[in-house]
Image (cartoon, rainbow, N blue to C red; front, side, top):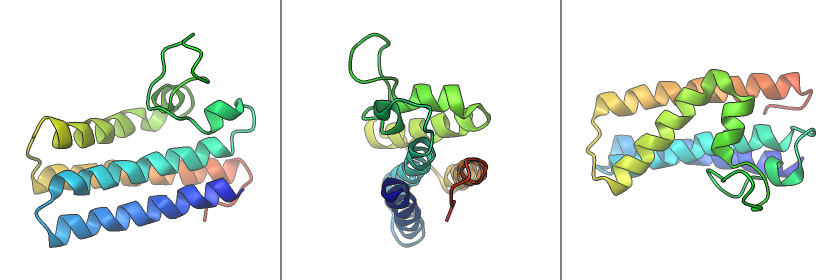
Length: 139
Protein backbone atom coordinates (compact mmCIF):
# COMPACT_ATOMS: atom_id res chain seq x y z
CA UNK A 1 0.00 0.00 0.00
CA UNK A 2 2.03 2.95 -1.21
CA UNK A 3 -0.38 5.47 0.30
CA UNK A 4 -0.02 3.89 3.75
CA UNK A 5 3.77 4.16 3.47
CA UNK A 6 3.40 7.80 2.43
CA UNK A 7 1.18 8.59 5.44
CA UNK A 8 3.51 6.83 7.87
CA UNK A 9 6.50 8.71 6.43
CA UNK A 10 4.64 12.03 6.72
CA UNK A 11 3.61 11.19 10.30
CA UNK A 12 7.25 10.55 11.21
CA UNK A 13 8.41 13.71 9.43
CA UNK A 14 5.78 15.89 11.12
CA UNK A 15 6.55 14.59 14.59
CA UNK A 16 10.25 15.35 14.02
CA UNK A 17 9.36 18.87 12.86
CA UNK A 18 7.21 19.27 15.98
CA UNK A 19 10.05 18.18 18.26
CA UNK A 20 12.46 20.59 16.57
CA UNK A 21 10.06 23.52 16.80
CA UNK A 22 9.36 22.78 20.45
CA UNK A 23 12.99 22.29 21.48
CA UNK A 24 14.82 24.77 19.26
CA UNK A 25 12.42 27.64 18.59
CA UNK A 26 9.68 29.72 20.17
CA UNK A 27 7.11 28.56 17.61
CA UNK A 28 4.95 26.44 19.92
CA UNK A 29 1.90 27.11 17.73
CA UNK A 30 3.57 25.39 14.79
CA UNK A 31 5.03 22.65 17.00
CA UNK A 32 1.48 21.79 18.07
CA UNK A 33 0.23 22.02 14.49
CA UNK A 34 2.95 19.66 13.22
CA UNK A 35 2.09 17.24 16.05
CA UNK A 36 -1.58 17.29 15.02
CA UNK A 37 -0.70 16.70 11.37
CA UNK A 38 1.43 13.75 12.41
CA UNK A 39 -1.64 12.29 14.15
CA UNK A 40 -3.73 13.06 11.06
CA UNK A 41 -1.35 11.04 8.90
CA UNK A 42 -1.50 8.13 11.35
CA UNK A 43 -5.29 8.22 11.03
CA UNK A 44 -5.03 8.36 7.24
CA UNK A 45 -2.61 5.40 7.24
CA UNK A 46 -5.14 3.38 9.22
CA UNK A 47 -8.08 4.42 7.02
CA UNK A 48 -6.12 3.47 3.91
CA UNK A 49 -6.19 -0.15 5.09
CA UNK A 50 -9.91 -0.27 5.87
CA UNK A 51 -11.04 -2.11 2.74
CA UNK A 52 -14.68 -2.09 3.88
CA UNK A 53 -14.80 1.71 3.50
CA UNK A 54 -15.65 3.40 0.21
CA UNK A 55 -12.62 4.92 -1.50
CA UNK A 56 -13.62 8.48 -0.55
CA UNK A 57 -13.62 7.48 3.12
CA UNK A 58 -10.32 5.60 2.91
CA UNK A 59 -8.86 8.88 1.65
CA UNK A 60 -10.92 11.67 3.25
CA UNK A 61 -10.49 15.13 1.80
CA UNK A 62 -11.93 17.08 4.73
CA UNK A 63 -11.78 17.12 8.49
CA UNK A 64 -15.58 17.15 8.70
CA UNK A 65 -18.37 16.60 6.21
CA UNK A 66 -22.08 17.26 6.45
CA UNK A 67 -24.05 14.08 5.97
CA UNK A 68 -25.82 14.02 2.65
CA UNK A 69 -23.73 16.87 1.29
CA UNK A 70 -22.58 14.78 -1.66
CA UNK A 71 -18.94 15.65 -1.03
CA UNK A 72 -17.70 12.09 -1.09
CA UNK A 73 -18.44 10.56 2.30
CA UNK A 74 -17.72 11.22 5.91
CA UNK A 75 -14.93 13.51 6.95
CA UNK A 76 -11.91 12.38 8.94
CA UNK A 77 -13.42 13.49 12.27
CA UNK A 78 -16.56 11.42 11.69
CA UNK A 79 -14.44 8.42 10.71
CA UNK A 80 -12.27 8.74 13.81
CA UNK A 81 -15.45 8.83 15.91
CA UNK A 82 -16.96 5.82 14.14
CA UNK A 83 -13.88 3.61 13.85
CA UNK A 84 -11.36 4.82 16.43
CA UNK A 85 -13.43 5.54 19.53
CA UNK A 86 -10.68 4.81 22.07
CA UNK A 87 -8.55 7.69 20.73
CA UNK A 88 -11.26 10.04 19.50
CA UNK A 89 -10.80 12.44 22.44
CA UNK A 90 -7.04 12.54 21.95
CA UNK A 91 -7.40 13.25 18.23
CA UNK A 92 -9.96 16.00 18.75
CA UNK A 93 -7.81 17.51 21.51
CA UNK A 94 -4.82 17.72 19.17
CA UNK A 95 -6.96 19.18 16.41
CA UNK A 96 -8.46 21.78 18.74
CA UNK A 97 -5.05 22.73 20.20
CA UNK A 98 -3.68 23.14 16.68
CA UNK A 99 -6.57 25.32 15.59
CA UNK A 100 -6.60 27.44 18.73
CA UNK A 101 -2.86 27.99 18.75
CA UNK A 102 -2.98 29.19 15.13
CA UNK A 103 -6.24 31.11 14.94
CA UNK A 104 -7.22 32.10 18.47
CA UNK A 105 -3.74 33.26 19.44
CA UNK A 106 -3.89 30.99 22.46
CA UNK A 107 -0.48 30.70 24.06
CA UNK A 108 0.35 27.10 24.89
CA UNK A 109 2.96 26.41 27.49
CA UNK A 110 5.44 23.59 27.86
CA UNK A 111 3.00 21.61 30.02
CA UNK A 112 0.32 21.73 27.31
CA UNK A 113 2.76 20.54 24.67
CA UNK A 114 3.91 17.66 26.88
CA UNK A 115 0.28 16.54 27.40
CA UNK A 116 -0.33 16.71 23.66
CA UNK A 117 2.74 14.54 23.03
CA UNK A 118 1.20 11.88 25.29
CA UNK A 119 -2.07 12.08 23.33
CA UNK A 120 -0.16 11.78 20.06
CA UNK A 121 1.66 8.72 21.37
CA UNK A 122 -1.65 7.10 22.34
CA UNK A 123 -2.97 7.67 18.81
CA UNK A 124 0.19 6.29 17.22
CA UNK A 125 0.13 3.18 19.41
CA UNK A 126 -3.57 2.59 18.74
CA UNK A 127 -3.16 2.97 14.98
CA UNK A 128 -0.13 0.68 14.84
CA UNK A 129 -2.00 -1.99 16.80
CA UNK A 130 -5.02 -1.68 14.50
CA UNK A 131 -2.80 -1.95 11.42
CA UNK A 132 -1.31 -5.14 12.81
CA UNK A 133 -4.86 -6.43 13.38
CA UNK A 134 -5.63 -5.56 9.74
CA UNK A 135 -2.79 -7.89 8.83
CA UNK A 136 -0.69 -5.17 7.27
CA UNK A 137 2.73 -3.81 8.23
CA UNK A 138 2.71 -1.03 10.78
CA UNK A 139 6.28 0.05 10.07
